[in-house]
Image (cartoon, rainbow, N blue to C red; front, side, top):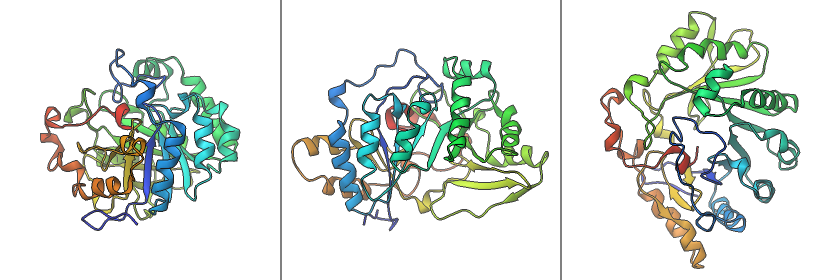
Length: 326
C-alpha cells in the first residue's frame, strides 16, 4: 500500500495520455501558440501499462485517464484495452468531442462512468471558451453516453462574468436527465489568467440554486472531492468541487502521472519525479513512487495556504493544466 507521511492512503492514479487537445479552453490552455511535447518524450503504450501495473501492485484500485484530451491520442483505444486488464476501476475525463467513436471500446473495457467537461450550454459562448464550434457534437455525445447507460458527470468550471449566470440552467438539466453536474471553483495554473475576483465560491453558487429549487444535501463518500446535493424530485444530482474556498486535502488519495512520465503528488505541487526515465533505464520505479509520496505536502502542494482572495498566482510554481493532466 502507498501512504504519505500524513498517513493518507493513496489508491487513485490519474494518468495523462497526452498534452494535446482539440479544444483551447482559456482556463486550461489559453495560448493558441502552445507547443506540445515531441512523441519521444511521451510515455509509450507499453510504458503506460508497465507503470500502471506497478501502481496496481502497490494498491491502486482506480485509474482515470486524462489529457489534454485523452481520446485524441492515436493509440488511445489500445491503451484503454490494455489497462482494462488490470484489477482497477477504469474511467476517464474527456471533452466529449470524440466519444461517439469509443462507445464500444468503453463497454468492452468495463468503463461505467465518464467525466465530460462542459462549461456552457450556449453554443456561442462555447465557441468563445473553446475556440471551437463544436457544442452540438459534444452535447449529442453526452446524450449518447446516457443512452448507453454510462454514468455521466459534467465538469463545469464556474467563472464570474463568464458562466456564473448558467449555474441554475445546469441544475435544471438534472430534472429529467440522470446527469451529475459538478461545479468547479476556478483554480490558478500557469498563464491561465486566474485572479481571485473570477472565483465563484460554492456557497454563492448554492445560494443561487437554493433560491430556485428545493435542495437536499446528499451523503458524501470517503475520498469524495465534491460536496453533493440534489433537487427534490429531480433525476440527477449536482455537486461542488471547493478547492479554493474549502479545500479537501485531509483525506486525499490521489496521485498524478503526466504525459511525459513525471509523478506529481498533488495538482498544485511543484515537485515532479521522473518515473519514465527510471523505467527506460530498467531500474525499479517503486522507490521513486514512494519518495514522491513522502514529499507530499499536507495541503495544496504547500503553495496555496490561507485565504484564496489574497493569493498571488505569480508566486505559484506549477505547469499549465494541460501539461499536468485534468
